[in-house]
Length: 140
Image (tube, rainbow, N blue to C red; front, side):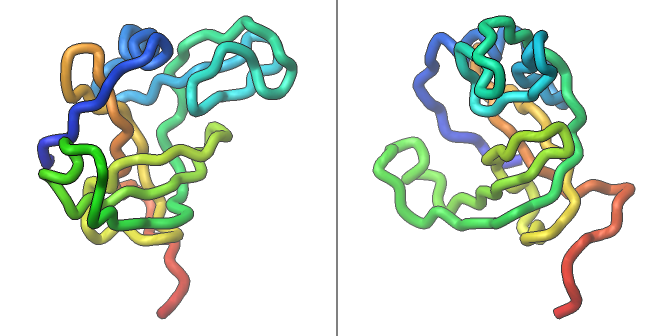
């Protein structure tokens, strides 16, 4: 795995980090309507309840798009470029942005998205090819 860029934490990212565990996926889930949230928030986007809990959610998803960041204003990213990221539609509901752990990941691929600890109270999302699932790419 590459060395991941450091970032500033927020109260919600620190709260998430306190609940996350390496190689699982911990996101907020509404206790009232059971909607899974990403990014973290103070109230449910569906029912406006403030009863959100941190829960391990299914890691499976499908890549919507892949991008390569060649330039960044953030010094930590600038030093490590180019950087592959992907948007993923999780089976749990939300769409997330994750670091692409494999250069072969493409749009349409089945992936697992998991938390990866990169520092004290710092976690990022990592997308890896789903080993047990075939690639879902259309024929080229």
